[in-house]
Length: 424
Image (cartoon, rainbow, N blue to C red):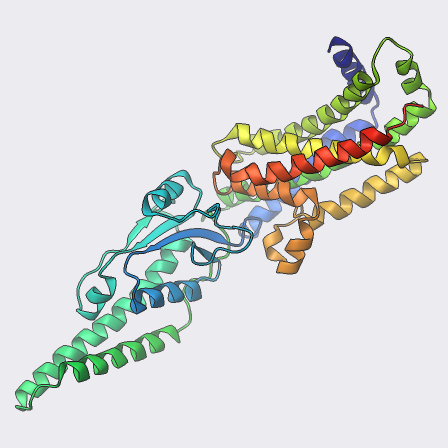
C-alpha cells in the first residue's frame, strides 16, 4: 500500500509541476463555472429542472376530483403528478411502491417532492352542496414567495369554486322561482341534471380563459441573487463533470508517453506486482478527477451554492463518475498509438458526451428521444443524481440507481482495460 501511495504522490507532483496543466485544472473551469452559473441565473433560473415532482393523493375518487386533477395538469404542464403521471423511468421515484399518505407527507417534508396535494373524501359532495371544502397542501416553500405549485392549485380551485358558486346560486334561484310562481317542484333527478349541466358549462367557460400560471422551473426565487444560485446548481456539476473528463481522459496521452519513455517498464522491474503498478496509476487519475470536482464545487460554495442536505451522497456520485471515466481511460489507453490521437479522442469524447448527457443544459429541455439517447453517456447519470441532490434535496436512496449504473459501467470498462493494458 505504501508503494502505491508513493507512486500516486510522485505522479501528482509531476502533474502539478507542469504549468501547462494548471489552466485546464484551475483557471478555465473556474471561469466557465462563474460565467455560466451567473448567466443561467439571470435568465430566470432556466438552468433548473423543467418538471416539478408533485405528489397527489385523491381520497375522493369521484368525477369532480378527476376533473380537478385534469385542470391542474392543464394549468401548469410542468407538474408531474405522482403517482398518476409517473413514467417508465420512474421520475416520481416511487420504486414501484404504492404512494400512501404517510409516505407522501414524509417525501414533502424531506424535499423529495416539490409539494403534496391531498383531495379529501367528500370533495365532490361539498362542491355540489355549495359547502366549504379544505384541500391539504404540504410544501417546504417559503409562504412569502411565489410557489408555482401553490399558484397553479389556487388557480384551479378558484375556477372550481366559481363554478360551484354559480351552480349554488342558480339552484337557489330555481327553488325560489318555482316557489314564487307556485309551480310544482322539479323532480330531484331533473334538478340535479340541470345543475350538473350548468356546473360543467361554467367550468368550460372558466377553462377557456387564459391560464394564469405558466411556470417551468422548480424552486426559482423571485430575486436575482437566489436565481444566480440556482444557475450554479447546473453550472457547477456540469462544468465539473466536463473538466473531469478533460483531466482524466488526458491520462491516455500520459500513459502512452510514460510507456515510450520507459517509465512504466522501469516500474515493472522494481519489486512491485503489476497489480500494484496498475492500482497506483488508477489512483493517480481518480485523484485528479476528484481534485477537479473539488475545485469547481469550491467555486459554488464561495458564491453560496446550495449543496443539499446529504454531502456524503454528493461525494459518492462524484466518486462513481470519476471511477467510470478513469475506467474509460484505461480501456482506451492500450489502443492509442500517438499523443495527437489521444488529444483528439479526449476532445471528441468530452465535447460529445458532456452536452449529450446534460452537462451544458438540463436534459429535460430536449425531446424525449434525445433524453433516451443522452443516457448512453455516463454524464447523464451523474447529472440526474446531481439534480436529485441539489434541486430536490434527495439522499442516498434517491441516487443509488445512478451510482449503480456508473459503478457497473466502471467495472466492465476496468475489466476490458486491465485485460489489455500494456506495460511495455
